[in-house]
Length: 325
Image (cartoon, rainbow, N blue to C red):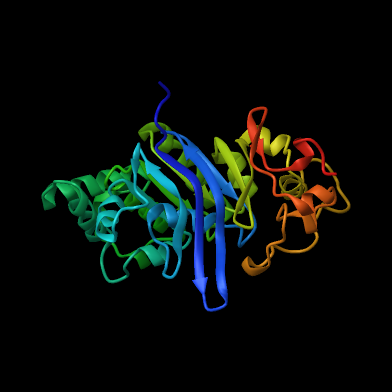
């Protein structure tokens, strides 16, 4: 019997009802993450990456709602849980790392008090045990002299060190899954590399599953085991990171990869994808990418392709599913 995924999302559809109709933010998204695996979710702004992460955590802002589909965490369905029940899941079973650590940390309290409060909320520990666990977490994420820094306030840490504290908070209750939403975007390149290496090490050592939301293909190349590429609220390609980055099968993924300059090779003009992501109230029929695709044919404008297995991965493109005519 195969291992049960830590996270399994099945045909997820997220809608936002409004005065002038219903907007579909996610449409038929299916993905899974195994223990100890990092799944990179990539795409342009507005593709639905962060929305997927919010839906998994039960953090959709009203009137947003899950209209169809299911979300399973270690074999337990969680999309139908009440807000009170999800509060027990968040932090304890699902940790979160956000783009700006200052939005995750309270400037009025020391990092130690915030860590111990989170630990005591989810684990059966007294204050002394929670403080010792907090120092151990700070040590794990690479904070030097944690016995001194534990009583410091967020403003006394650099941006990279604050993000390490946020990672420690996410790990406080030993969650099965961490949703990391652009965790390195606000950091210097050298600090980005440190945070990426830290995430990879924690994933390997602790067996935590990580959903890494980013638009940075370099971060994906360094960190992810598998990649899920999103466009206009839909999955366009899924597969092992090495295969997707080196031999992308979907024209959108090829465009993303072609826009990255290569070291050691001089290129006069980088590939660009003409046009922009469609608005939620103006998603074209057929393949949502067809107005921007140089290879689009009549079938691409007429029929929406499903995500079909192609070798080691899967692609939602008529080019790899029998032709575009």
